[in-house]
Length: 266
Length: 332
Image (tube, rainbow over all chains, first blue to last red; front, top):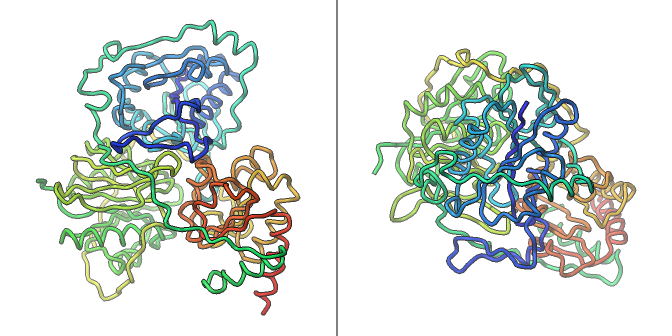
């Protein structure tokens, strides 16, 4: 069975907030040269879910990523973790995609992959974090979808999922093919081993251009957007932090407690 | 110009009463509708919605569509979509709002696709563009490092609102409204995911998302024992313990208490951030808190940038002293 995993390269969310800058036009984030991009955390969770399925069966794991300036050492991580193939939709025309144009291009790529059983996506990305792409892919392809997935058991024609929600979890049966949106409860993503890293180095990535997946210029990137970014800015923190001090920890604690009382917080 | 008029809301119910988030979206919808001088319509699903419908009107709805469905506790997000899609196509709203809950975030992008429009998720502010009259939807991006304002020319203008950000209006039981009963068409869906079992996991004390006070520890707490001390402070404040990512990765606390991008999003009245630096990964999960109190030995730690009160010092000395002091005050 083919298991397709949608993955994304993002700016490192653990980078110090002081390194975060927006261009003067207020329309895009300036990527700091000193900080390397990373594979999105939720992409890794989705990959881990796919690789668990591969561990238990003879699934073929195919990672697909859309973007621009994809760094090979970052974006090839799925291969070093154990994925079989990596397809890159990398083209300037894909720049400034929104959830809709991203989902549309990925769905067209998935159609070209053909004969897929499962499509896995992460819950939301660390950068724009819309949390929409997987759900829109399901709609475009007309597939059932389950969100917040923490466990996947695949058998012949169906799959049994555990899905978390606010108060607990549900056990859900879904027919194949389907889209599953993976949450962090799936378990820590595995580290690539040396053999995996060496194999990934040698492995050629598969590159598809918009025309390879029958996309018109009007349907992709900025031109196809349905949601427009009017402004991007850094919030002014108006809550100046008031530092509480004291000569001893006890005095500091007393001063904080008094402050909390004064503000009716205690 | 658009033929779309009014505001449509998908309101969630809990045991046939209006949920807290539904009241919040009604509050937001009412404000927008007063600016537009247009009506607010809400869709509710449940077994016996007479009371919830009256409540919705008191909280600002002009029209309530109620879909009576049995066994609501066993149905999943998929069941809502066909009914909501049908009503949205009938009502043709200018604006369509729902809440960033497990259900809301599941159905919003799918409904947007079916209604040929776009949706902005996780909104914390809504307003109108002066020139175009389009809805300006503000949401945090890049883990809260930036705010983005989105607009779309497509209708309905769809937004999913972050819980605990928008305020309900003062309920007025004398408000009048229409209640329309609808025949649910959920049984017509084929190939839907089927729920086999539903397990409610009641945690001790509060659900993290509902706790009025949260005491959160970071990497600097260093051990399971360290978190026991935070637990003590949380207990006397009738709150819950949370953690940033490193303590969860190290197994000091279960993953379920993680707050941040890859965990829960909380907004308590009082949030103690202890021995954590305040990475955007973490701050994106707690920035909605009303009052953040930071304790960190590094005065340059980013958490002080979002905190209201801060103590620069060793948490191992500060937290026990603070626990004793608060115990004393609460006993008075």
